[in-house]
Length: 190
Image 1 (cartoon, rainbow, N blue to C red):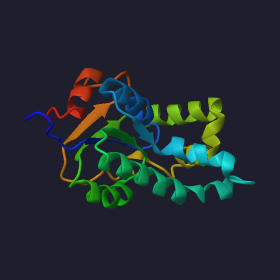
Image 2 (cartoon, one colour):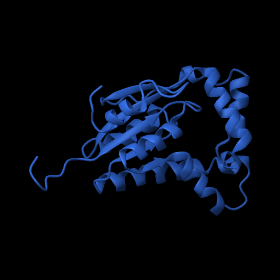
Image 3 (cartoon, rainbow, N blue to C red):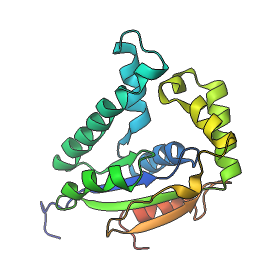
Image 4 (tube, rainbow, N blue to C red):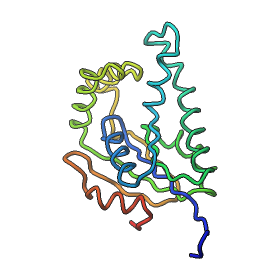
């Protein structure tokens, strides 16, 4: 590469169902890569203090605003040449149409966080119990849906873009290991 040549930034998408370890991995990956992490749930949580008189029903109205802010932030960063880690529990129907316009300006790589259903359920239950900010996400309703059999991570629809994909088991640490996940984020093949 000649001096001053610019390559396209990398957009590393960390995806998976609720409780699959996405946010923790996204932060560790961003730290290892030396780039920002844009986390959809953190954007939504940041909207709550400015939203007047939200109740459990009213919080849902923040979903569209958070979705828009999330993808707007990714677009601005990628257009500026910033490598970024993006994390959300979106399924294909939300990820794909919002990522497709970025394919021409970024090297998109997808990490699929996988974990047994029992581990995901335990993680969701733990965060409901200890993180007051999680109220913005309706996790209690998710726990009830899991307990009643109305929600299953098996029905999660993965991103269907033609892009490099790395499955990462997050049940106990990371398999493959964090160093390999970081190498994938840097452009190492899989």
